[in-house]
Image (cartoon, rainbow over all chains, first blue to last red):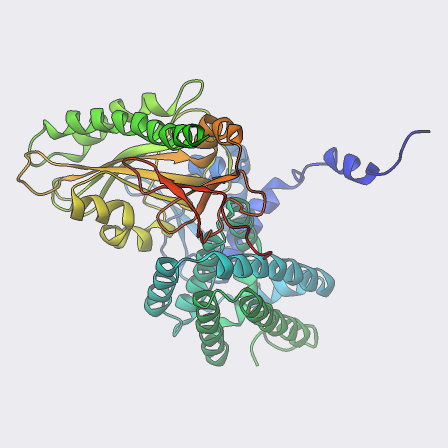
Length: 252
Length: 239
């Protein structure tokens, strides 16, 4: 009789690749980045061919995706020298779009993605703490001291930047790759709460505590701090979703 | 058996000596130039030098190029002439079958580039006028691989300021392929570590790549490198 153990793992090898709806993926990725403020007004997007290469899709897919963004008024295309696709200045904040985005995501998926994100960040942070040398800790402190968490845009950029620094200190190329992928997909949404000054301050405090645990090579404390930090961000997001579903706004 | 262990250290030194010999060729070529250059001229020059070392069947380098000191390239404070070898499934850059130029125009790079003069791979060769090996570290800007960055200062004349550094990225995997068989042939566990005792490769299973390995026993220096081979490394506690 043939052994049946490991069948699930074997089947997973041949599972369908994530290639359905690639135009939608391109659109979703860029829309998130624009409405959640990761791409700034007037910023020029990479060229169409560059985007195609980076996303790993056909040029036509990128063109279709950009057309959707253009129709939605999120980008404009300028011709000629110095031309390209530029992020539009929003007359009003993109709050309607943000609301639509949150409304379109099921609570169960938001929670699950936040859990997955937390798991990756916890793994990065714990290993970073165990593996950081003295010069690594010095660099991390310098990085954090220079990072601006006082503005919304600064907090969003630097919150993600700090996760990346920690992933690098974990010495794992795969954790770095996964964190980059996950941040591209979920980062802007997870950091939605950065519009709240208290949330920005508490994130900065939490990051300082993590840097302290890294310096002390205290993996367990660093991991615990990361768990609490991501939970705080996820709770803000779930609260915002609940407010929207009740007919309110993203912010209180 | 000490012979085997010194063979290991020598093999590591020889691996990096070969890599630095390549960089030295580029340095000689570039140091024959003018005290200031036009960006397009420099780029064409550097591309011609480094791209052959990034392509082919088993390239030694995953990235290579020249980083100019401020003022060397006319009208430019910062100038990176850096090429990457063919990429498969790179999370940042996608895939490409040929060498591609590193594009610094994207915003993610700006913070990093702004203070490149304080970064180890630039700052050390500048202050010591010596070659330098940075790493191992995860390169999050280009390849997303675990690599070393080798750099060498370039001067037009011995007594003039540095005009930049030539550099190349070598993956840890590439070094491992070259030297691990020798390490495995030794009758005691060994670990290769860098200047902060970070493990590059190891034949002691509790001492793993990327970890810091405090060591109380004997060791051998790798000549010309900030690396040493730990003999019978202390087993590490679990994470």
